[in-house]
Amino acid sequence: MNKKISLGLAIALIILSATATFAITMSVSQRMYNKLITDLPKRAQMYDAVEEVDKIVRSKYYGDIDEALLDSNLENGYINGLGDKYSRYMNADAYKLYSSKLEGRSAGIGVEVETDPESGYLLITEVYPNSPAQTEGLQKGDKIVAIGGDTVTAENSSEMAGRLSGIKLTSVSLTYRRDDVDKSVNVVLGYTNQTVSYELIGTVGYIKISAFYKNTLNQLEKAVDQLKKEGAKSLVFDVRSTYDGTIEYTCRVIDYLVPTATDGNKALATLVDKNGNNVKTYSSDAKDITMPMAVLINSDTAGYGELFACDLKDFGKAFLIGEKTAGRADVQETFELSDGGAVVLTTSKMLPYISESFDGKGLTPDTEIILADSLRENLSTLEKERDTQLQAAISMLAGNSSEG
Image (cartoon, rainbow, N blue to C red; front, top):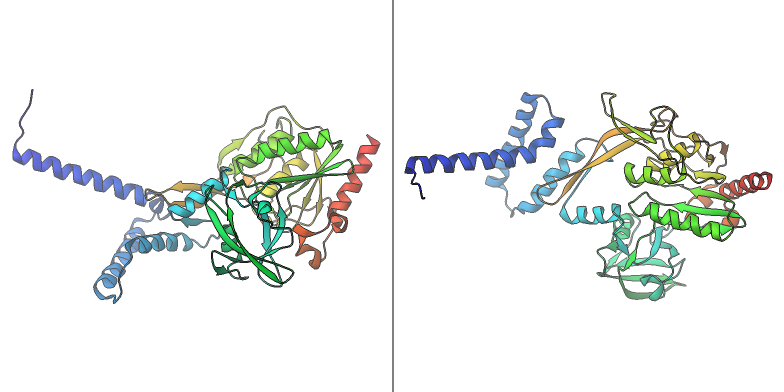
């Protein structure tokens, strides 16, 4: 049965609905902002200041206003205003790539690159077998001088390197240089990016972990299994210059290697907020890998790389070789925004299994070996025989294995 309502009631319902919609929208967009700015007068003052600037710009600005760009820069500027280099705003496109990377879905051309200190170009340090890059003839030692028609420089090399990864089955045009001859190719992004690489050196399994993403554990399990089949008696984990990933994926990797955490907080890692409260812990199971281990670290090992190294030492699984680490225990959370973008925000610090916090102090290696600057700058292409840190680890592990 249909029921009629008065015109006045209809108008009232429309106003109520509009008010509720506005309130919900404002609540979502201001929620994080209001958590950070808890002083109401200051919050109102900041809103008023932005509104005042907006009125001036809209009434006096000579050029056209790109609303989307303005909104993006406003959000980006606010996060930058925190002064925290690890917190950042991403628009929808950037967030899509960021999520793909963390989830292990990021596709690339199948190379590892680093900025060449002399030219500023992207130096190819590794070409993975059966990758699109290998198919197109790229080789280790080639220098990528342009991507998508834009020249690679020391200033933009990080941003340009990001163009080598993206959505699977899209393509990227690049120009590379070999023996002073340039060649241009179109390469399909069809290779699942690797965070784990490995090789057998004598009876020592060498494993490089470049980041801790969702697919890192699976890649590590395959690496360890293969190295065992090839005759590995011990393992060297290389987390030099490793820092990227998430706390969850890092703890999954650690859990694979160590037994149940029974001491301290009985956790692989404990997250602590700014008030000193324990907000989350990460536990482990009883399964572990029972092989002698060493971990290579340097001054660029930070965050999740430090947690990995510290926990393996705390469990008595490994000794540390190399240089004192960066000392960064900040943990970020990702907050999705209604426009498809996201904010990555530092929300806590992590504590390792037993040791005190390495935040601001770093990890001191059991055996300190400093690489010469000339070797350090080209670590990715450094021959294993000249890598004094790796050679020290191999010697120690070989001795332990023979004693066992």
